[in-house]
Length: 467
Ligand SMILES: Cc1cc2nc3c(=O)[nH]c(=O)nc-3n(C[C@H](O)[C@H](O)[C@H](O)COP(=O)(O)OP(=O)(O)OC[C@H]3O[C@@H](n4cnc5c(N)ncnc54)[C@H](O)[C@@H]3O)c2cc1C
Image 1 (cartoon, rainbow, N blue to C red):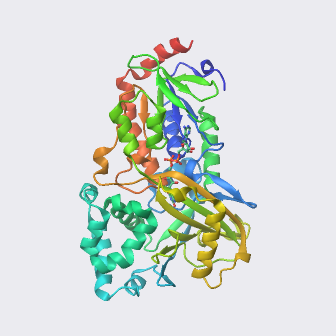
Image 2 (image 1 turned 180 degrees about the horizontal axis):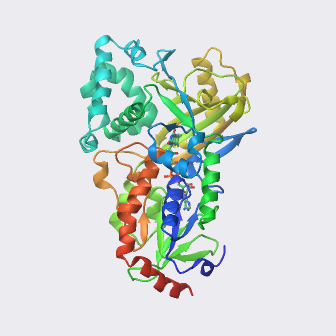
Image 3 (image 1 turned 45 degrees about the horizontal axis):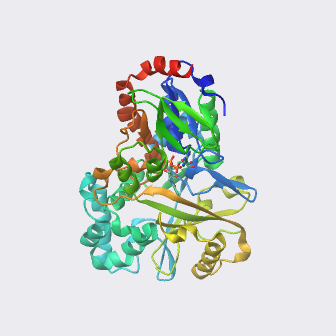
């Protein structure tokens, strides 16, 4: 690691911890403000949940990602990287696996014909979705459990035949602690996507996937003077004096210590509580109280497609998967996937669920047995590659009254900011919401606090301190 004096160029020094899209966005915004920025990522590559890996000869995202027409912040970011015009937009179909049968649920007519439900149940189900799309105040939704709200509007039949299996598939048993804001945010995102022009569901991707986006983005950051450190996990952050400005000592392990004026940590909330011991006890307990949803997600490269649907939702409770995501219904097989087909098999669960550590081979066997039962034509012979990715901290669970219990972004340790995707309140986790949050919180909370603590004047003191 270079000596920190080399980087004290007369500007306040910022460290961004975590090189996922949130960390990259914060670094980007700070660099645009002319700050001296370093970004430290623990993994060997940048991207976090959006990072890619190799499946045989194919490089694609470890976790499935699509962009919606309404993802305006993400599209603006892609534009600044010169990639927006390359977005490929594809009309998608949605499938449903219910009662041992696979059926299309891609439009209103198909929805109204959904066989497991009576006509009254279908009307109540449709009415519930419509109602969720019309509600504007998420706080009302946040104050009641998702189960209570759905039972009230959809009735027992539709709740038990459709919502309950879907909630269990998407959230595991954690659905019991989840507020109605979860279903509200999902509905809002889908309605917004339809309102944004196309009546049909269109999803987009950049050729090369997120690997390409990350490549261009990190290069652009580097060209703008941001110092990018991979394989640099941050163990701890400690303020070394009691002044209002600067002097945060950052321990990277193995005796590597560096001093910064400001630190923005974008990693999962419970990890932030462990990272900065000087936070007040109430801040630490708020950070630790945030429950996360984790995921085990297999990527499977196949010789043949398995269905025409991008997402197949599953209501049969014997199926141990959240859904089947057939990426190659969107991503061009020939030019992007070596002529093969790419399917993801995710299973979401609470961050403390023992299945998060299920051995890869066990998960593989369970997936293959399930697919053999679900699809007559599926054969193990078709599987060219099978790899399992897992993540403990994917999305903060939106529990009852979640927004009132969030820890502050501006912490009690001067210059230390805790800004991560747990602060998304009016949406579900996705890249667009993450970038929007980063932009807004930096503008409205982090930057004003920095200015109030002396802002650029920190330079004088910290240059003195370094030099
Ligand atoms: C299965 C799945 C499907 C998804 N599908 C979509 C989709 O279709 N569309 C969409 O828009 N979004 C999707 N998302 C969401 C999207 O991936 C996230 O919104 C986004 O990646 C969150 O970025 P982040 O930077 O907040 O978090 P992360 O990506 O988790 O980044 C945090 C980073 O911090 C690093 N870190 C942790 N501890 C330390 C430490 N001590 N020191 C340094 N670094 C550390 C981690 O290694 C990681 O890189 C999906 C996510 C998953 C898991």
